[in-house]
Picture (cartoon, helix red, strand yellow):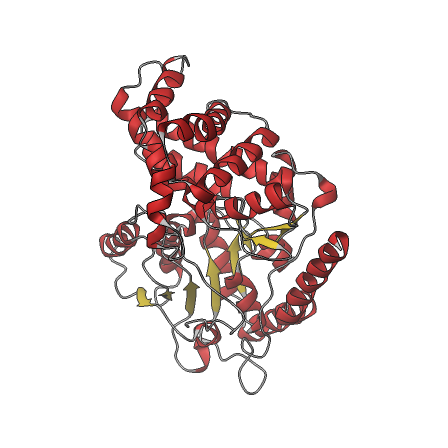
Length: 441
């Protein structure tokens, strides 16, 4: 379903890849004057010092968050009136990168071409700093990631209060991705350091951090976030849109067909670990040969999605697992299933689980992120990346009488309505914004 922006919202896309010039996505930028002002002298005095400080911080596993924040803010000051792209193309920049790498025992064998490639990647990741800071009362970032850079600059330079929401823990998820990625040691270490440095700088300057579950708090405090800044705000959904059937009871597959049906809803990409679900369904099918698993969602990672489809074909599960593609009616997908399953290896506070709860459907999910906080029932949890554990949990629920599953679904909806509504979620953020506004004024 396409979300329609309210009239008081303005979107300014910042493409990290594809475009090179700031004026291509910020029409008001004066491209010619930016390039004219970006002289070798300006680069040497206004850009190289903060860039060198930032580089030194990401060459070590544990840096100084205050230094990272100040360096990023100074780079944003430079980008206000100068051409960041031209500065990053300066020979002194990639020579500095190469020299710093050679001086480090871990990277001493790096070649000049690799250093230039690293500098190019850094330019792309720093592009959000080129966005002019608008006249606002509060800045709100949706992750301790590159999207926080404009907000961080606004806080450091102008003192605008910064709110940071964490859905998943970005550092953790990117490191998991780097571990699986076929990349050089330089890329894996440098970028894991960069992700950590930006997250810690964001935690350092943020006024309040609102993780979507208590699970995230453990990671945030380990990364240096002060507990006094933390305010857990659970994701919420509309209980009218996500609701049981007209009679107050979800239909489930058993009401219209004999096959016991499992629904999976999400983006098909590695962190959702659909391959693990496929292995689990193969185990389940040995006990329930007529089980049906319906996969709803887009191929966010086409390569991974192709692997999943090939795994289904190789396992001979073509009649058992169906790829239904994206749906504009996820509530119906939940209602028509006997069981909703989440198979992720990493999550924050997943909407899939809460939406299914609101629809009064039984849920089985891997014990990741805030899933256990949502369900509050250990019997519904499975060990992540463990097909046998997930299969056991699925079989346990599908083996129960339908009346018991419906009672479980009703209890889960009651819990969701009490704790995870959209109204409660919005009210919490409204209170938070007003609190920060009072602090400033």
